[in-house]
Image (spheres, rainbow, N blue to C red):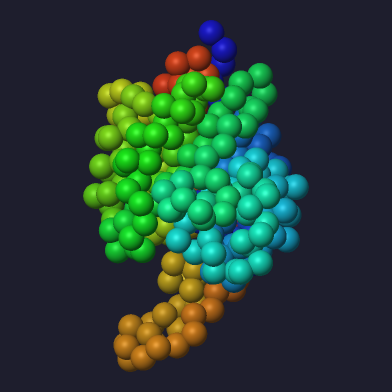
Amino acid sequence: MSKPLNILLIGDIFGEPGRRATLGLLPRLRAEHELDLVIANVENAAGGFGVTPAIAEGLLRSGADVLTSGNHVWDKKEIIPFIGKENLLLRPANYPSGAPGVGSIVVKAGAHKVAVLNLQGRAFLPTIDCPFQVADIEVPRLRQETAVIIVDMHAEATAEKQAMGWYLDGKVSAVLGTHTHVQTADGRIFPGGTAYMTDVGMTGPVDSVIGIDKEIAIQRFVTQMPMRFEAAKGPAVLHGALVSVEPESGRAVAIKPLRVPFE
């Protein structure tokens, strides 16, 4: 039997501090954890809102293998033509038909193949197509190519993420949550062999309110007045989840959170 594949999902890269931490830490993390595949959620990579072609290209050149996203993927309009031709940048698969880009991809990880599926929840987020029904279509199709399937479940509601984890238990290798920017302590392997974590956390500024300048965020809550959010500056931290998967069966054998500071 082949040795397990080590796969890292980096949680929402937020602004310049998040990009700096990712680019600075990835070479060391790839070597230290013998990573076979790196997935990074980039929907907040451009100043906290969206991603640009230049940022996406830079991350792909610097060690990320697949980029996932979520509800902020369209915030920078220049990404629309780019995502239509760069399949390594995913948008949620449950956007209605006609949306540019793709929601899943199969890539090589050494001698093996890994599928990455990007889904978006609907609770407290824009109402798009049902992620559960789309998973029913996408997962069997992807399993025709590989047993190793990693799902980025980008959602606000904890319950919706947990429901997706149980729904796909035994059908995919991992269901890893993004979007809420706070790493949860519930990483586990479900009975069917699917690794699960409600949120892998945010890669971005430490002294912030989920990435936003803390003073601006506080004033928004105190005054309830509209104001322009800005990404915080300063020291950063990389958050993510490291999953080890048997390549033949697709079953996860380990999951652990990563939290790596970067000055």
